[in-house]
Image (cartoon, rainbow, N blue to C red; front, side, top):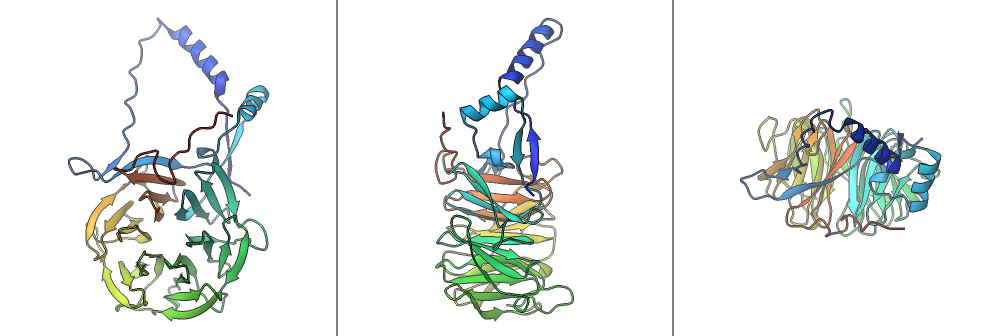
Length: 371
């Protein structure tokens, strides 16, 4: 059942009422001070050289969809409210060429915000590809969407149109599959099996995408290099390597393209470069690694060697841009835009590279239609 909110249509009616009210009040009260203009957050803040600037927040389908003149006239004429569909409990995010996919575990669907296409849809809401509790997601080089369904204990694949393709894995394969990542060449799928307190299945399972079969299991429960304790999310890089958020060990582990251990970085703590509750993870075209920390309410950015470069965001109850209560998922698109999911505020904040124009890249706001 879609999560819907009635958002009254404003249009000309609101404008007329506001104008009449203003006329009544003119001369009876002092003119209020205008609100200060909105200043989008910039990271890092001055006096450092800016790298990223806040661009937009995605909340509802009508953040990207537009009404035609006919639709606007109908709402104005009938007095009907515009119905919006939003997020209930978003978890993870994957972006490709302006298509923003967000998993929603309560709605049992993946929500698609197609920015260049100006359309919104839901994936996984009907059989045979119906989802039970989708968590981690990723998009392969061919545009196919892969979803880790933690309740159904399987991985679901959908094509570029959101049509169900196949399922992989079963209760014999997984204990608690929480995230997926497609290799840069599109031949392999890495699945995090988080296990549990009483389980020893804390590992990464590798699937061959040609056959859809599991071909390798990497890691076991432990604290040594290549071992995991409650692993959570995973990402790949353009060189064929991959990274795992090793949550219970408060670190990130990096692996080479032959699946051998490369390095680990991070430790438990409250200082920059340390982790309290690491969760989401992503990489960019330069090999940098972005790690969400739900306790800090921010994103820490590291280079390939695990050295901290900067951080973005802060923990807050306000929900304004750059403020988070329960951030969970993150992705970086081809143009360097950063997408951050917050479960508490049910939003996706988008930041673009400071040097990238607002009208540049796949996820730039398309020119408004006038039809």
